[in-house]
Structure formats: C-alpha cells, structure tokens
Length: 285
Length: 285
Image (tube, rainbow over all chains, first blue to last red; front, side):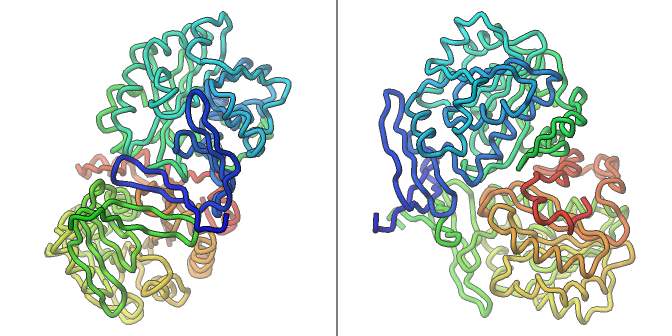
C-alpha cells in the first residue's frame, strides 16, 4: 500500500481516534463480526472487531495484566480459571503464568478472531497452544448454562454490549456464571469507561448486584480504548479485593509485569469521584 | 458553520484525535502561539494552543484537581502559592478554594490565552478576578529569577516543551524555583504521558534531581491529552507526599471534588511498572 493509510475508530458522532496503518494483514467477515488485523506505524499490530480497536501490541499488557492478575492474586489458590471471550489470547496467556493454575478454559465464540491472532499477533496468542489451556470455540452464554464444572476465577473478557457480546451483560448470563463459580470464587468483567460508558457501567453493576453480594469496580489506563481510563467490575463470593489480597504472594510468584504490581493492585480500587458518582450504591469499595 | 467541522490533534505521524466542532468561538495569534477556542459537540468548550488541546470543559477537572489538591493537602498550611502558566485559570481556581491560601500569584506569559478563556471558558477562568489571585502577564522564567517572595507551593502548569514553555523544563529555571520556594515548600510540574513522553519525563526528572533531594511522580487520567494516562512530578523540601499527607484535612476542608479524594491521593503515587521503567532511579516513590 503506497497511499497514506489510516484507520479511525469513531465514538458516537463527536470523537475519532486515528492510527496510521502501514499494512492491512488480514480482513475477514465471520458470522459474528468483521475482523481486521493491521500493522500500525506507532502501535504495532492491531486487531479490530467491527471497526473497534480490541488490541494493539503497544498497550495490550495494561488490559491483560489488570483483568487477570488482580483476581488471581486475591484468590489464595486459583486452580481452575474460565475466560469467556478474549479471543486474542492475552488474558489466557497471563492466567497460565500463575503456576498454581491447573487449567484455563477459554470459550471464544469467533474462531476467526483466534485464527487471525494466532497467525498475525503471536504476542497475545502465543500461549494458546499450551497444554493447560483448553480452547473451546463456542458460545460462552451456552457454556456457563451447560457446564457442571466449577471455577475459582472467571474472566469475562468481552467486547462492548453491541453485537455478539450483548448477552454477556445480562442477568441470566451472570446467574449461570454464579452457578459455575466455586464457593470462594471471583468473577471479573470488562467494565467500560467512566468517561463515555457510564450507562453501561450502571447497567452491568446493577445486574451484578442482583446476583452477587459483593461487587467492586477498579480502574486502569488503556491507550487505545476511547476515554483511556477504563474499568473492570469484580464480584466476589468470599474474598475482599484489598483486605484479603496477599501482597507477599506477588513477590513469591517470581512473576514480572509491565503494568501490575502490589501498589497498583490496591490503588486500582481507589476510584476518582466522577467514577463513583451515580454508582456508589452498587459498589462495596 | 454548516459544514461537517472537526479539529484534529496529531501526535507525531502516527496518531490523531479528532473532535467534532460546532462553532469556532475565537481564533487568534499572539506573539507566542496560536490560540483557538471552539465549541465542541461532545466535550464542551475547548482551548487549543498551537493546535494542541489544552482544556475541554468535559474533563478539565481531572487535571486541575490533581495538579493543585495533591500538593495543597501535603503541605500542612500553604499560604502563598505560585502558578506558572495555567492561563485558562483552572489551577488558580482550585488553589483559592483552600481557605488557608492567602494569595495565589499566577504568572502567564500570554495575555491572549487569559482573555480568550475569560470571555469564552468561564468554567475555568471565572475565579481570575478573585481578590486573592494576583495575575501577572509576564515570563515565568524571569519572574522566579527576579522575585524575592517565598512560596509554599509552586505549580508549573505548562504546555509541552515546545514553543514558549521550553525553558520551563530546564535546570536554570528550577534553580530559581528552588530559590523562591519556602523551606518546607513543594513544587509540582506538568509531567507528560508515560505512553509517548518518556524522554521528556526522563529529562524533567533528571533536572529536578539535580536541584531537589526528593522527587516523586504521580499519575492521573485525562481524556483529551494523547495517551490519556498523564503524570505530574512533585519535588518536596520537607514533606513526604504520603506519610505526611493528612487525610483528615481533606474532610475538614469541606471541599468537594470531581476527581480528587483521599484514596486517589495515595493511589496516584502507585505507578504501574511501565511508568517506573527507566525512571525509578530518579524517583523516591
């Protein structure tokens, strides 16, 4: 491609983020969504679903560190982990860095996302062939309805509640998640941005409050999602995300991180006032 | 304007942030820079200097809360405060909400910025006529060289180190800042983004380390600066930003904030690993 190529993610009708593209590596249309992988100039390889940025090599560590290590260091001994979505493989990659995790089941609805990332973004997808990862191409909603397994940590690594991910924001889904979560289990979900996604946050937290007794929200900073500041919700059957967090276990793990550390773990739950605004009655932190 | 109007801030040659514009309210060229004020669709009124977004009404509280209340709640009794730059008035507005502050001197080099904000962005500029604010239109570099006053807190609310703000990132300037900082004073400076501005952060922290014994960095999330996650540097002659922080004083102040709170104060100093990377030897936190 010799022309000046850019990709733009628009948010509503008033915001656009443009990234310079060197090369289109893959462009397909599955039964669920469009799937594009491009080589960008400043952000490495990038995955877009339905035109929305999912992952860039430059900043994927922030999202994947914070969606996985926060619950995995709150639970004292997570052995069985379930990832719903997360087709790029980054969340599962981080999960199995925890030596105590015996099995990470990953249920991604769209094989095209997995295949495209395996071929073009090995940075996130390289662990997907690991023996401890069971990759199921299927509907996460149906999986949690049908399974008789129990999981210590469940990670809902979904896109926004438009398109294939919509049911992942509903109460019926979380009733089933609750059913297959162990008695001391933790579920973390992609929780949108406080800058532009307050209504979705309110809806998701309301659903979680209907199902779980203890619901929290924590934040991190992403580079390429609209708003930058982004949240995860966390619902816990037993453990408190800070008072039951064993910071020594982070050191003992021997793991190194690009984003996560002991201080960041606790700090992530200290939310700015504008995030709490309108949501405080739904939060335990 | 009936056409589809957008303003775009480009970062290097690989990133652009576009915002929908309803109306151009002001467009001028001072001896220092271009100054534009536009009414945006999604972000309220917005100031741009040399084409770079300085302030939007939607998110200005994040920057102004964190540049001002962090040092003002570390110092136990700040009475005299100096703001260098900050022509939109937002930092000075937050400073004088602290009842103990007797005087806030603000030195802005560009009268056009102040005048444009007074006329078009009263949200940030409305406090500039307050009796406790002494507004000096002049060169901050020269001011700190010449003044014989001492300040408890100095806030360097500058643009990036290109154009008129360049000397505000140099050692000579900070030697003069040190001279007019009281014996238990604190200086906070706009500290760029870890995603794209690492070299400037390294340079600024190196300068600060040459002048001050105790240099820290803290982060917050902005909506419309490239990268979203942004930093302030903090150099302190006496007080530690966390162990000397009196959280009760925040409650006792009776002030309300959109971004800042006691938890956010401490959390802001818990930096993700990729921020610390390459800078840790220059930081006391």
